[in-house]
Length: 136
Image (tube, rainbow, N blue to C red; front, side, top):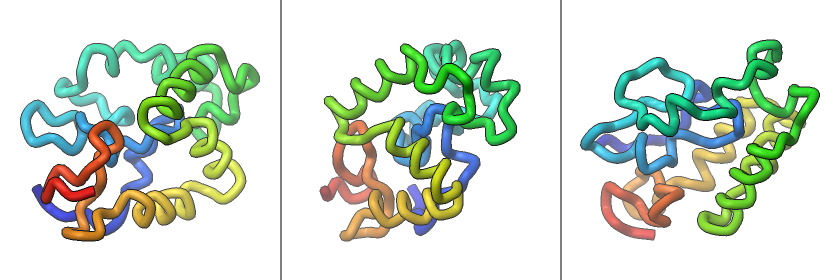
């Protein structure tokens, strides 16, 4: 697996998830290409994601949930609660950062926040360590 020094903005999902730190994206076998792709390698729960397939999202300019008139919707609140509890990360905080500071500043911040200090790879949000070198 190659080291990653920066995170591509195309890897930021409409809900605020940074797909670059997702286990599905980081793993080598059956690798997901991220929420914003039409890849067949996406898990079924990602393909049928209520948020990604939301009709309101299609009407936004930014393609992020923060622009939706129902923001934050019930599903996004549930997702945010789960990620706050299990992974110490917030979709709502991510979306608010993007709205206030822009996608470039967000990806720059995420590249620093999730960078492995040992090998320069990315820490997996779902595992809590770098899948390259297994360090925290």
